[in-house]
Length: 198
Image 1: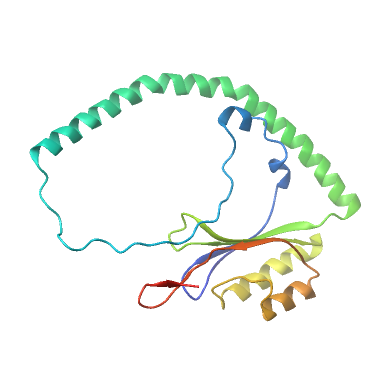
Image 2: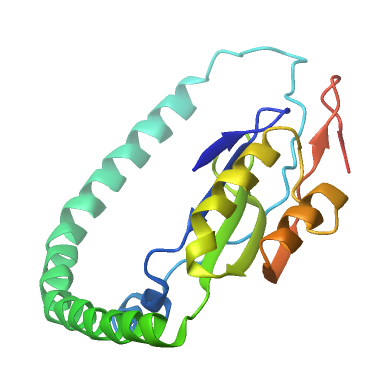
């Protein structure tokens, strides 16, 4: 579920559909690992408005044209290699999907018989949605996951940060018997003038 807070940031509150995909990743060995969500600060630098646009010198235009031609030649040389590598990785990808299916079936059986908790992620994104500013991982009983997502989404509309220690948030988490697995945030709020502060 997506929510826009008072400062215009986007929050997502999601029940994790397939957590076993983190456990079974054989193709990660070939590709150098999967990208993980990483929190980043919302640092902005003022634009340099001093001189405006200057006309490019002819030498720079020629250099840029040569650079573009070299980049095109390199792309044409590397394209067959990338296609061949993609074809070689297909069997490993099929193996990964098969392993994930087996692991997912096992995880589903454990969830049915042992009443394993459901994971709910509360993630806050910077205004440009390019990077993660806040991530909280919660564990809750499966039958309470959907009502928790709905209640947290309503709560986030009135806030600009998600803090499990905040009294209103803590009351919701206590009422749903939620365990906070992890909470990290580097969310910087902006004042009307555009300066960043905590």
